[in-house]
Image 1 (tube, one colour):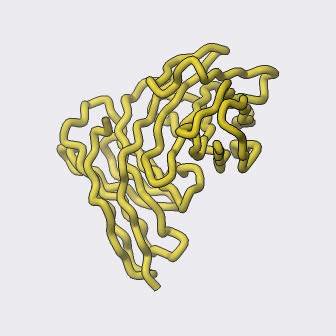
Image 2 (tube, each protein chain N blue to C red; image 1 turned 90 degrees about the horizontal axis):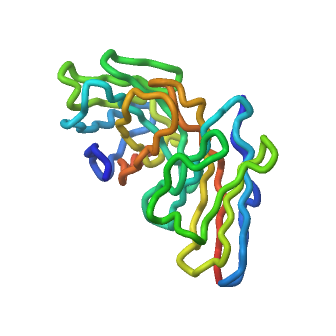
Image 3 (tube, rainbow over the protein chains, first blue to last red; image 1 turned 45 degrees about the vertical axis):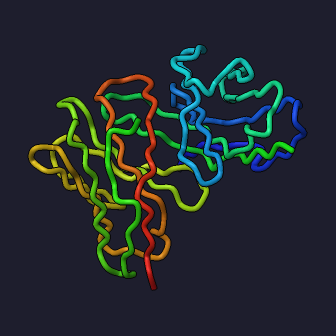
Length: 115
Length: 112
């Protein structure tokens, strides 16, 4: 069964460092998302992406964040200068975006720890 | 904010049916009800969705009331592996991107 894969599964970084989280969405999906979940809190929407541009972003997704689909298969989330509060689980998701059937398929997540 | 209301937690005996309610009293005519679950800290997993009619798949059944203001997710024979947080989400029946908004969900504990 096709699945969304994410790397790395866990990354530890120093505050102020740049981090890139990578995702390979399901191959025939056209819509891509990043969510995050701070330990013990809700799953929060960060950004959606379609046709090589951001469709929607939350207020969390500030200038420190960026997304890219560099090669037609990978979908990346970059955090330019990490802060302690960026420590969270980051989930990538994809969908085919069909009307009424646009269920999201999530990856297993990348745990980011900022020291 | 999420447009649904769910109990914070529920327990269910292993092998019994788990019935998870969701209130979505402000649902619009073109909005679907989706259910996802999150096992431990894994990525949320799609379970089932419906518009008006009851739905069943290999994982669960979804019962939607006639007025569509509430629904119930039924896991017919709960196992220990069904212990998870279950999220009920409403979303418009539109194609394209949609930012699913996750609430706090119902933490289901299946007891041996």
